[in-house]
Image 1 (tube, rainbow, N blue to C red):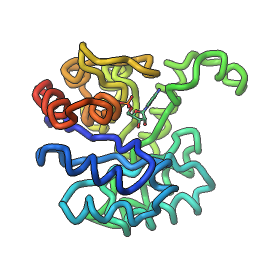
Image 2: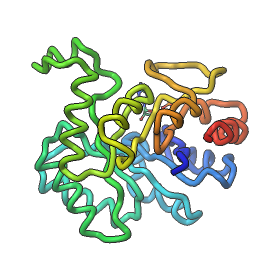
Image 3: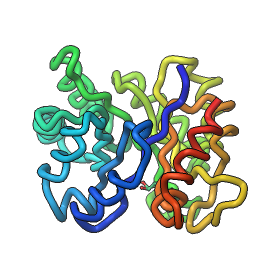
Image 4: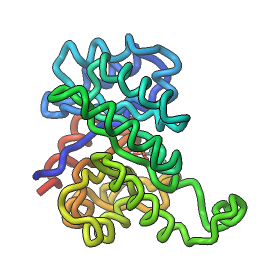
Length: 230
Ligand code: C5P
């Protein structure tokens, strides 16, 4: 399947989110709403996007007891989101509760994707948490746990995509932030890749924020990224 662009709405409020929507070409069909915007505006922020037939990736990184996550997945699904995130470190029972709750909703079920190791964590953070593995090994261990529990995919850096495809095959959705065109500022993203490289490695979705949002011409920036997707 051809990879798809998801524009990350890392903006403080609904007015700015709608301004981004208005400036982008119609081909941009998927948007990510994360904690900042969702906490600021609540589910009402989805309305202008759904009204224009856009799909929403709700990136709330759920991590709680299985029953709470199950109910949060059901509630998010009622808002019509197409994909949402959970933390793989929430454990097998939590992951299964999320995956089963989604699957029970039938064709309207949101995809559940699991975050493995946050890109802000390094070896010393894992050691401080009592985890003796390297970040790469921890990503693979959590990915295995999450996929065995029935989630649809994983959030991972573009540089992990090839190893995850090799280990887990073509089925899992691989959702990849840290995408930059060769001319872009890297910002605080450490493990970056170009759209073409991420797609070649096997990414399913490319999540792009600042290269589009901070561009003088967001529509042109989005088009350049879309053109790079083979
Ligand atoms: O860097 P960019 O603005 O394109 O970020 C897009 C998304 O990537 C963000 O919404 C965030 O979820 C994720 N991100 C990340 N690691 C960082 C910075 C952002 O995974 N260091």
